[in-house]
Image (cartoon, rainbow, N blue to C red):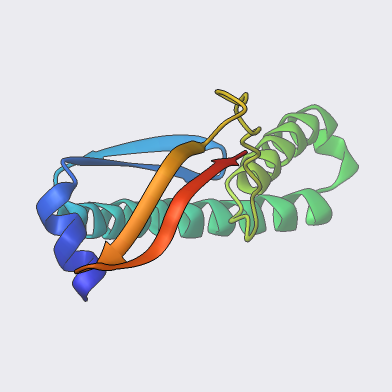
Length: 133
């Protein structure tokens, strides 16, 4: 809710990595969600159509007589091609992106010399020096 509000007002485009493909979306987060939903709907229809064709081709290959062997080989090749495409488009639940740590930019993060802190005329810390690596 507050994250979505923030992203809607800050993001101008969003890049999504899905199954090895990069999908750029122009617009804010709400636009991204709407466009992604439409893309997934189209992809779902394609996947359902492919599954139906795969099932039909497999039934034909398994039931065809050997007399049509040349045609059978072509249809079997088509079936294998469709099966490979379906496997490539299968949803992957986990993915890993490794971002190596960057080089150190220096050895000293913070250095203070001769600090004094107090309230009013009361001194709490006097002449404090330190280095934070």
